[in-house]
Amino acid sequence: MQLWELWQVSPEGLTARAPREVPVDVRFALDVEINGETLCLRGRTMHCTQTIGGYKVGVRLIFDE
Image (cartoon, rainbow, N blue to C red; front, side):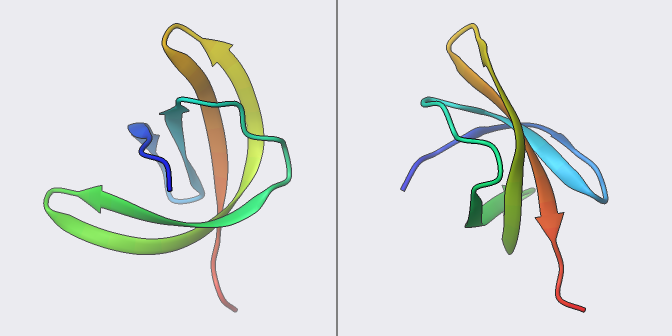
């Protein structure tokens, strides 16, 4: 398990800062806590760029049809 700092949220995905590099196209489950509520989501890594203090990771959310 890793803890990521959430930077930005949109209807299609999110951006976070991760402590380690995450390969593109990796699918994973994540728990996102917003205002005290936890959302259980699934996503896929779209990009990962090194930044100050870690890696900026773009995640496209995957929703069930």
